Image (cartoon, rainbow, N blue to C red; front, side):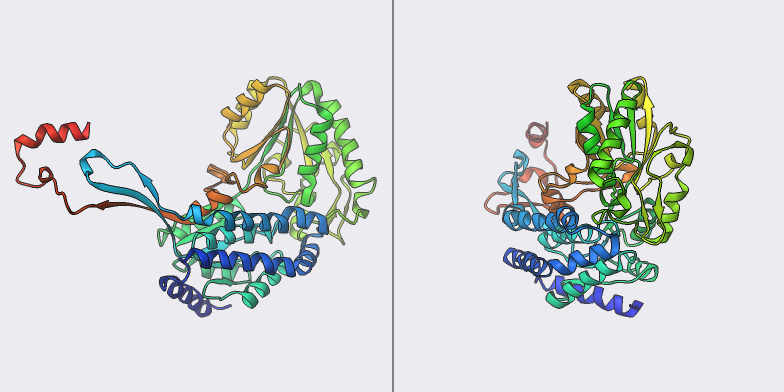
Length: 459
């Protein structure tokens, strides 16, 4: 799509928004119900696209993508009437007699740029929130997941007004052109490097942004942890979607005294969950493309591999791999892994482990496995991270009742549920001043007799 066509889409959406067509609550609910129906009818197409792009099984695709989107839609349909209400707040005595309230209002024309690793979920979830808040949306899915991007474009263009929701496919040229347009809000999910560019481009129009990025999310295994359960849940979270999950445990940071026992349990769990030959497992996915496949192979130090390490260049698959005796100086610890490679590092002192985590960039997630409530409380209070779990992985993002997002190097802003509605809303602060009373003290010429009264009001 060329620049002129993109400009026309943005202009068309601005006119549509300014007409007031997106504001009625009933209209927002109607669009979300229509989305839910379309996704249910077209579920097979979506599953096939996810299989083609990432090798995902139908079970994983529904559990981790389609089902979560449907859950967000249902939550929003139920709560939009309450979220959209004006909220009355106290009025200072100095403003007697008035009514003060905050009014949630949509930003207007929004841009949603989504990644390839969960191409349906991470496109549709922010779109649901944007529509619920009363915006229009230009959606730009990733070029790295072309099958899913094409399905999204087909469904949106077939069932929804492009003046309300438009999908633009393509690569870097389309991304660059979109970022030159004047949007009222930009929601981006992806890498830090591209996120920085999005923020630079948005600054030209002073456009507010939400950035959902990533980072090296630690998984701390404290000496009191239930190792069998910890291994089971770590293996699930690490190798889900072949490790291509922004909140996957990036590395395991365990107490030295339990490392060998944990490693033994992890090996058992990999075999239990993925079989003796994971590359032959029909439910085990693949790396998105050759570029990332070879990048991941370059991070494997064969001398430190204690499980897995095998790969298939034809299917772009890498076995669930575990590396031991890893240090923070190794190549695998210099970047976000984003693949099925699990480095294991050890610590001896819990406070030193916290200090080490805090010396690194703020991660999107942090996980701790422990039976010590004081340890869990200490690390969750002391470390900076977006969100996480105690004695589990991944699942904190699978709810509409809590916001999801990072801060610092892992992003800014959050979404899901009420947080998502708020992200795509501007809250106008309004004072409704009554006309039957007008206190004279604020007007010039100022009179000394009002001084004590003003001081009493403003203390």
